[in-house]
Amino acid sequence: MISTIEFSKKDGKGLSANTLRKVRSGMRRDGAVAFENLFPLPLLKKARRDVMRRHDAGELRERGLVRDIGGRYAAVLPFEGPFLARAFYANPKLLEIIASLLGAAHNIGSLEAVIARPGAYRQHQHIDGPVRFDRTIGKTKRPFHGDLADIPPYAVTLCVPLCDVDETNGPTAIWPGSHRTALRARPPGARELHRKFPVEHMAGDFGRSFLFDFRTFHCGLPNHSPEPRPLLMFVFTRSWFRDPNLADVFPSVVIAKRNLARIPERYRYLFALAPDARRPLWGNKNKR
Ligand SMILES: [Fe+2]
Image (cartoon, rainbow, N blue to C red):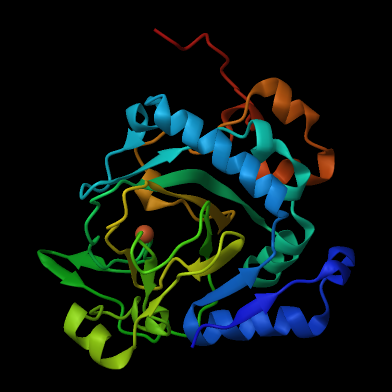
């Protein structure tokens, strides 16, 4: 069963070695851990208002990534308003956890909202990003046959539902332990996954969140309720990894120049993928 880490006030001063060990062992065993009270609830309520305002205005759908039909859509969110709060983007508990999983050289991969609208149906079972070491020799594809099951995570997604989630309004289904099979020369099919890894539905009250490895098989379940189900996906990657889901999306990290300038120096590295964090060596001269 996926472990739940319950944070208390004293964790605000830094996480204990024991808590970090629990996170790391949960991620190693299950490819997922759940959190209670990672973010202050008033902040999440503000985030919910912001996301629902953008959803109701239609501007989120307009910017939706063409990724999934079935009544749910994902869209990149700008780091503005509540997402510019340090308790969100540089949450000390979260950053300690991310560093313990991805090392010091990590950055934000993206911040997205996923809205499962009423009537959204079950999403296909998938992983978010494989690393493959296949080669092509002549016309033959040669997969890498070595064992990649033990490599530590290279990218993780923090899912933050912005409402209570129960069985009716579209919880995320996770197959704990399945991340260890995702990089096999021949990844497992649905039948093997169902047989080997009992599924868990990530339901819970508003305030609960969960972190999962990019290799963990998962899917969104149907929303049978009359309300949309908003959720944040906050992706962190090792600095060399790029999320293949956003290969044709630019920018994947959206923050205005003036807001980026206001981010304290010690957190600036998180925004390495924001266009304004990069040096334009050729300026605009080369533009036609
Ligand atoms: Fe996914």
